[in-house]
Length: 68
View 1 (tube, one colour):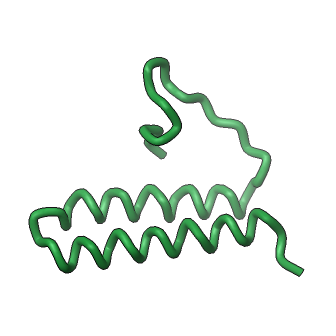
View 2 (cartoon, helix red, strand yellow):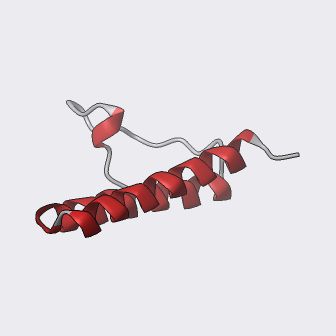
């Protein structure tokens, strides 16, 4: 049976693959999509390593803007 952390990290990696596919199809977006993909992959790795890890979100930023 899979844990929610495993499912979540798999979903994050799938999203990273999606961003890379969008970047391949839209050269003007490649750099941004690669950055997005890297961020999703980084979070997937952190989630696998320590599912209960706490992070500090900088003031004025929502979770969609957190940089890993």
